[in-house]
View 1 (cartoon, rainbow, N blue to C red):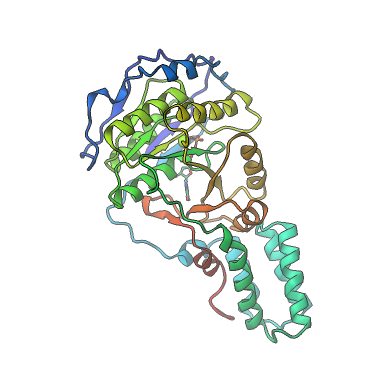
View 2 (view 1 turned 180 degrees about the horizontal axis):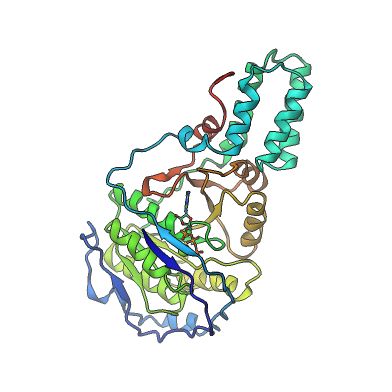
Length: 381
Ligand SMILES: Nc1nc2c(ncn2[C@@H]2O[C@H](COP(=O)(O)OP(=O)(O)OP(=O)(O)O)[C@@H](O)[C@H]2O)c(=O)[nH]1
Ligand SMILES: [Mg+2]
């Protein structure tokens, strides 16, 4: 395991001179379709100078010091089922114990179901309206036993999630630019590593941009993922300007004919005004090269943060036009209900979910698979 530590930023980072050479990580093995030409790092576009003349965002204090790990590469990790991954969650366990005793179908069972949903972070409003609807149907004798309630619940939950099952199609543009955003430690860099692997396996030429210029070890962390997946990483020196790195990377992606560019950014809280402004600046700078870039602003959410995730999305949406979500860490101890809360509150596409730490643990979101992973297969199961 390689460990990375947060640095304690002591001073305001100054933007690098525009002509600073890009320090590029060439991966150990050659990346299939991307030639490593020399001019990719040049920053002679006057548009960049103009864009970078905006004030650099002030460094925000972030004195937290905790280790990050790039999970060890797995030779050929067995792809585990959604149920295997999700069954450990308290949501799945709660539902399973609720239906395991072949319970009597009555109001008490529905009360218990409501509590289970609320406890799993589905949200009070969503849980109440779902259960009240089921209760009415029970009183109308639409279903007569707990097995029928389970079937109805499954259907309702899938219906709630179906509108946000909208997979990300990166084939429409070349290069397709994905900008990842989110608060600290949610899994942005890990998700980028997993996406690099996924897109590379689809025979796409991928380039990564080390736009997290804030945390000392962030660039190394991304380079490790890049090297592991034979995907090149465009980076600059420490304390480089994030917008400059990402602009440079888009130029490189274009000149090399890359299919997908994925940009990492530093984790930030909505209260960190300077860092939030930086996201707007990144988007503006990219538009100098491609008016439609970024084509996807992918917000990464930690699935264990519960209802807090809902306020994070609300806050980021006000600053950058979030176009898709990734919900990570739904394996293990996650409650899992936040996916429903997010779907109901925003209707934003949930592109992927993280069901573990390894490269193959990022799955395209599938409403039916997700619900089936949480609910017991049958009464008594
Ligand atoms: N169990 C599990 N862990 C995950 C998942 N995704 C990310 N992680 C772990 O979460 C931790 C933080 O991941 P990072 O990718 O560094 O998070 P980040 O958002 O880039 O963090 P900052 O750059 O500091 O903002 C790492 O230990 C990852 O291995 C997941 O789906 N499941
Ligand atoms: Mg990161």
